[in-house]
Amino acid sequence: MDWVIPQTIIEEEILQIEQSFISPIMVCHKIIGYCQTILETYRKHVSEKGFSDEATEIRFFKQDKQIPLSYIIQYSKQLAFELEFQNLVLGMDQDFIIKKIEAINTFFSMHQDFGVYMGLELENRDAFYFTRKHKESLHYMHFQEYRFDPEFNTSHDLLLATMTANRRFLGFLQGKQKVLNVNNQGTEVIRTPLQWTGSKASLVELGISLTHSGDINHGNAPKKEIILLLGDILGVDLRDHENTASRLKNRENPTRYLDYLKSCFERWIRRNDD
Picture 1 (cartoon, rainbow, N blue to C red):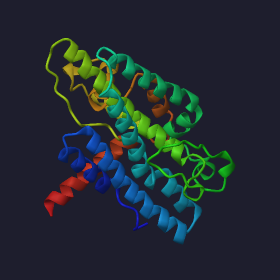
Picture 2 (picture 1 turned 45 degrees about the horizontal axis):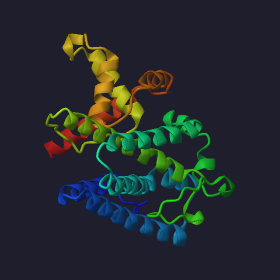
Picture 3 (picture 1 turned 180 degrees about the vertical axis):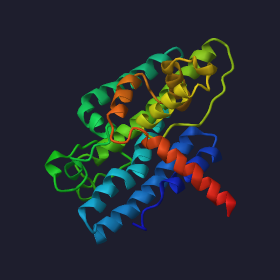
Picture 4 (picture 1 turned 60 degrees about the vertical axis):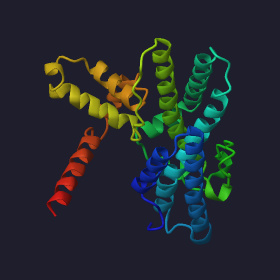
């Protein structure tokens, strides 16, 4: 689908916006507007031309649309947070963040079955979740910055985007928490804009590989410590990494992400040889 904007281009533009404005509120507004423009273009194309087959429709709602939509939801949440946070009474900031984190945890508990389906990278219910045939099962969620359209939504595409956005928003909140903790101790903190935007399973796969490579502490570093450190650095909650690791063992291709990294590195070599 040549009308779909590649993920790399969208994320490069988002990074450029983040680096161009000091105000986090302005950053959120700009990114939301940028992604809204993309989705409106997609909406018009789908309305006018539709899809050539079911597989193309599934791919669009499960993958392509997810990128701008999840960023709209994420930055809408961050915008609301920043607007509320700046008006908090001194001493209420930690409680405010904790309540936000609890709300996210409740959300994931409510949608655990679908989360497991996506985490295992299953496909047997894709036609139900990611085509517009089953509108009676729509998971309607209201976001002021996103215009809900039954002809441009499947039963679960908005839910999936909200899950992706909430994972990133959780990392954002945990980063805020660390800043407050360090500031309360009177210590300077170094902040990073880096966030893991791949799957949790891929990061766990990477952590396990690093553990058993023997290249950290001569192979004496605990797997749990390495994986949790990766999660802390990149803003991902990996406390359930043991369950994820078990699912990786049972996957048809347990080294899927490592194979992908290898192909990325080989592509970089070829590009630099040209």
